[in-house]
Length: 119
Image (cartoon, helix red, strand yellow):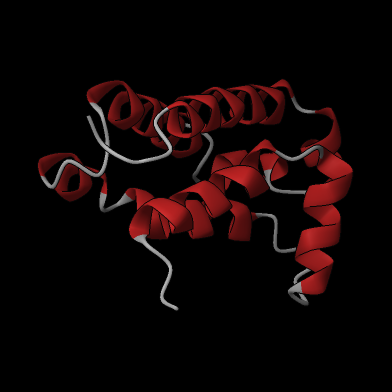
């Protein structure tokens, strides 16, 4: 059975919301023990569809806004000058990652509130 875009989004958010130890374990399972950016890339793959998902009534407006907020926070962490945020140490200690986890948890709560989807 093919997973819906909403389910793919929930899965990506679960990985972003997980504690640092579980995030590291997930990356090791993928064979990417130092590929911290995979957490963001996985989210970005489905978050890029947020406008279309809103238009198709697969997301409510508050869910869309929560996704956009996470996307913005991750974008603010990118760039060569911020490469120190994309390490195993930063995953555990950085307040930026703590913020990402909180945003992801909040978004998951919104999505699970309306598990049936959309409005």
